[in-house]
Amino acid sequence: MWIAVIYLWVVNGLTLLAFGWDKLRAGKRKRRIPERKLLWLAALGGSPGALVGRWIFRHKTRKKLFSYYLFGITSMQVVLIYVLSTYEFATLF
Image 1 (spheres, one colour):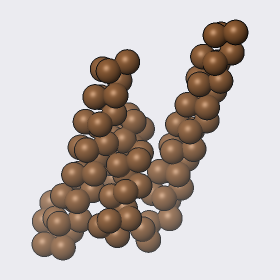
Image 2 (spheres, rainbow, N blue to C red; image 1 turned 180 degrees about the horizontal axis):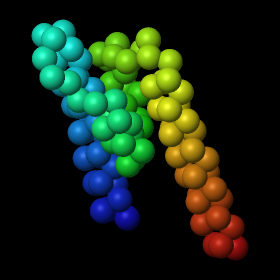
Image 3 (cartoon, one colour; image 1 turned 120 degrees about the vertical axis):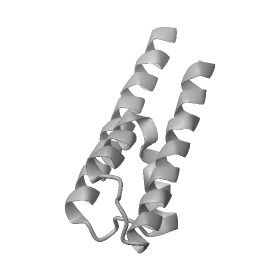
Image 4 (cartoon, rainbow, N blue to C red; image 1 turned 90 degrees about the vertical axis):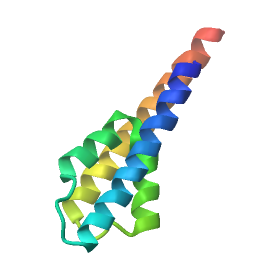
């Protein structure tokens, strides 16, 4: 259990830092992190960090397709958490 919690903290922290780093690089017109990598970080469990990063840094907010993918990933993770938590609860009784 603790490994999963630590993993989620790390992946969300990295995702948040990646969004901040990409925003910083965008302002300086330097090489950026590809959107695909940002979405992979979200898919690996960093969707809360991605959503917070979008909000804090106001980054990737005008990219419609990116937003659809990010919210799709987040929605699927929420459904998965719900299904797993109800399954775990159901197996207790």
